[in-house]
Length: 350
Image (cartoon, rainbow, N blue to C red; front, top):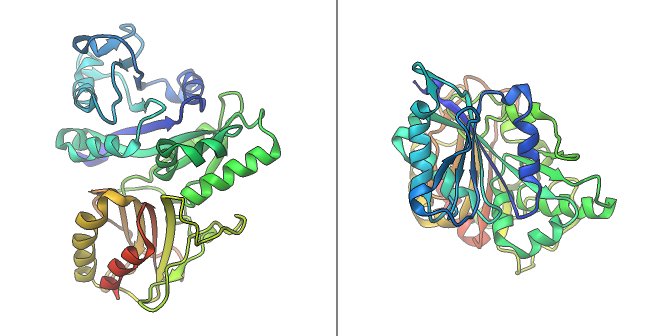
């Protein structure tokens, strides 16, 4: 049953960001006592021995000799498929949660697609969210030069700023600004010596709109965003966090950008279907993430939509609006996608 699916958290971050240090702290906590950990590291183990269980008691699986976002995706699927019986005793599963730690160069989106597009995995696991660790000392420079790090931040549901005790105030501010420009919707939390507020991680429920328990303001925190109206005559404005420093919207060197739109009027279900049918095949490869809260004619509450590249999660319908704001709000995080093409697609909702 869908409500009994095992929660799964994807832990990612660039090389040296501190995600392994964080993971080592998490697995020692009582809250993570019944957690299956899947670690992906490059190694020289032969392909016949990709899966190495470190002991019969420790529920840790290592995937080596490749990166789970590209060369050994099939092994990840098999690991997750087999886990429910492999880590069982007397027919009782010995874990209640899964954490997957990727390599520092992995792109999260292929992994998310494996879990959601494989029927057996989707029926067994519920994607709770992506946690991305960013190094406060070197983060700004890393995000400026490495597209893998940019994508890790762009698809995050929670951003963890590590090594903040070692970073200067200027380094922290530069890294925060860089993260918020790539992903203005994800909350940022500090990691001190590998430790962070565990409740924020456990409370993640942002990846799948259906049956999500996250409040609407948490699922898409629109209060800190600036929105541009959808209009065929008005250009698309950058979505900038309210607290961020002014940014040149005409710069051409950045591939990954965030855009926010607002529709003052309700839309019909037919319009949404037509828009998504056109959007996903055409712009899916350049759409790192879409989050939308839509006011649909005839629906008592908002329709919540979430997509990662070609992957469109089943939409969730809330029973009622949490406040008086009934406007449609859409947030796009894109890779090398022009404002004009995105704006053109939105005309289907006019």
